[in-house]
Image (cartoon, rainbow over all chains, first blue to last red; front, side, top):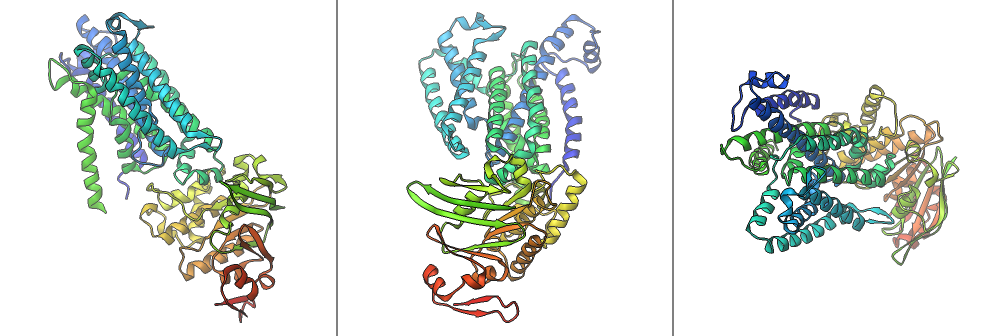
Length: 339
Length: 257
């Protein structure tokens, strides 16, 4: 039996997410009372310091967490459907490994320029990560596409090959970098939301909006694809077109997320999986519910990242894995008991 | 109005899988394809349903080349049940059957009614809320049959409909084999053209209007089961000595080996 109906889960998340946001607003190195937070949000702050902390630091950071979490989890759900594999991950198509190389390359080559160097307000590392991620995905897609269409199996293998190559390049770059660069590279790879700004939020918001508008159009096609590609074609689905569209959207979504927040692991792999265990594989509900669950998880993880080692803070990526992995293991154990 | 293969050949990595096959599947009739393993039966179904392009020749659906139909229009006229379906996600039975309604825009209420009726027809109502991944082979096959039935449940305004089945009874017990053949006959009476690959010659003889015997990528014989099934042919194609008798009730040929 399914544990929840889709509507119930979405309602529960619709309550949980704002609650998490509210808690996230008031906790951190400086604790702010709920009433002060409300005053600041409606433009009536009790002090300029609180105003700055809330509106310039915490709010953009929370919004970025929501958007990145939603994009990673929904693209994860889409990729798991497209690859017909409940353990697929957006990084399978090479986007994360490519982004990692792009970021490392920028950190190592641009060196001292990195602090001041910026392109329309975005760091060169972000730009490098996006280009690297997108280029790797295109390469994987080209490798797997022949006159007969795109082979999902070849794509998986090409993703692994490109991932290995990117890993080697990454190690090479790390090997030739000094201590400071090495630290930057490894911090970037842990994923961090602390650099949030309103520019990043609006960029991420535009991408997330695009995905949320376009994914629902293909949710029935994804359901049909779970039967197999030829079965989907017999149900009137233009499989090749759907595949190309979803891979491009995923590369765009994950590419921008990784560029702005680094490698935040776990969310894209496990959140859709957990949601599927709860409400079943129907993508009409799975994709939006995963997006909401991913957003909630990332907001909670980021709040914890800010408070566990006050006055310092942890990279968010560490917390997502620390929170999610035991939960997932508990679910698997529960499922084993049910069977 | 027909689904027809006109002089098609299929070459794949140096092998001739099909050679100059011409076949007409008429609406309202049941065509059964039999033949030894590797004779090209499944290849023919793949070409006939547009899954693989023919190397030569053309497949027409209702007097238009198959690949010129819009995919959604085609899906309203042609439903295909593959031999195996690799569905390993926990859909319930009614969700799987509901996938058959994707090409249609009949609305949720009508669709749920059709899903329930289709499941009932294949004797799978009790599976409605069960997970596909936890069903037995025969139950899965029945749910998939209900899915393709739901796809062509109502007549299409675009033309007669066709149902292609690849070994639909392979996982079934005796009663469900009979049930499947009854469903196929009902569909034919409604005007649907049915093509199916079968392994059991007696099942094929019992329900086919047109029996096609495949051997080595060519059609060895085709026609009414009575004309086609001879002791010489079965010896030549399958290499098995047999006696052809007559079924005492249906008067159809009965192959005894």
